[in-house]
Length: 68
Image (cartoon, rainbow, N blue to C red):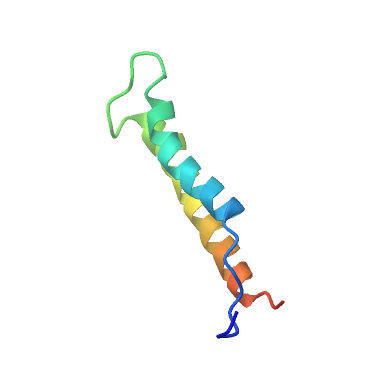
């Protein structure tokens, strides 16, 4: 606070980060545990990971821009 900065409150940032690490193991519970690069990766998993990274980035940018 002495430097005029706000304390970082990480509830949503940690939620996004936890989901980034949880998505890949979740795909391993699919029947037959599809190999990396299969159609399920390209059709769903890859896009979910991209959406999570984009959402986390937007959240952090909005948090930085928000004033007290």
